[in-house]
Image (tube, rainbow, N blue to C red):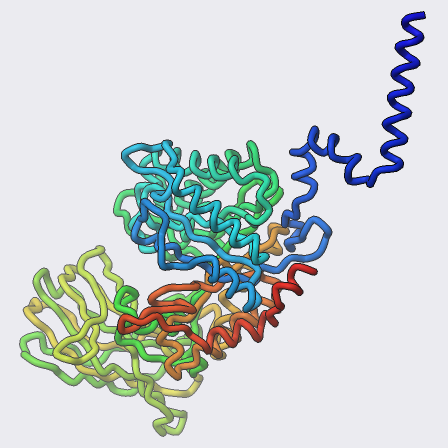
Length: 566
């Protein structure tokens, strides 16, 4: 009986609860169950972006295109406390108003841990990151956390070898990414994680073995992230170059497609950067070796890829006993090898000896038509030459010699030269090279002259816009081959490009090409002394309003109210 009465009471209680739920609003009834499953509800209410084939899609299935810019966060100064002056909350509001939906957010490991106390993470670093996430969320902007400066050193300038040669650096980087992923696993304002910026790995057995070294580290970091975070996209960059373990020389000979590595993951995007033509986008910067470059876009310069050297024709040798500048002028050369489809100029400075120097300036290639009429003279900019020596001796670079922009070759003990491919060969035309050479303390047996070098180029691009298109085609090929999305993590034109040199046209063309090919992108950078939307000049912060107008036009900026509704 007692048992029956208890059952009767339980049934009555249940009926009462059901009656109350019928009378009260539904959200009140859901409160207790929501509390008991708060974590599940939080996950289901978020809106993550993930990969679907070669696209990025939101949880509701709509395609998401990255329309982004980067924030540098003073990473190059290795900050140990929250950086100030780069941006604040108003910066996110401004970017949202301009039409951006993403920020590639640069990180330096030193903000989160010290080399003296590894694995002891700084609360201030994560508080700063939390604050930026809240700002980004408020203005409907997603963040790509990019490890721009990892343990072991900044990669882009080739000085971060320790990341690849010191296992403890890889251990710490993996652990830091694990800490970040554990903390933000359910944060949908974060779009994903960029593991390492512009890696230049050192191989174990050879330079090309660097590809394997990077692939293994990227996979290891990804596996650690996936222990607690299945939501966020992993952004894996192609290598910038690979280094030989013995000489530590960087091998740049990989084709662009070969520079991509792949990992095993269901939510991965492969990343590349595009600044072609380098001499245009980076002109005027001493740190890039282009302080004397002044060029425009579009122009009539051709671009050559997959080149193979065939032969050369040389002018008479310079007299190494003569002091001062000597004028060197060749006869007109006829191309006879059927393989040749491109020509260039070369400064040869072989066996000049240690302690010796050769300079060359005012170099031109003259082109004549089949009738012998001069049809054009092409100036050969010293900043566009590459150095080579047979035994690795010596060095070659551009410099200022007595107020004249010049090439310089020093200390060679074997065959050595600096070359620049300049023209597509036209059948029946003839060519002459000319310029000035000056030698200092060159050995009597030295060979110093100007040459017309002849090449076969697998591809010649003579349209400026096609050069930009060619810079994204390797990534498109990788996307098609892997079935994965690709992304342009950096593109940009330096501040000097906007001094009536066509910077606005370059940015507009680049954005159009990326959009036409379904590639999301982040412009470098919001605030930067060389590339920024904001940059400092003469102690004042300047805004590039030309660049702002392009962004607003291309991204058709919505108001915050419109964004909130969408």
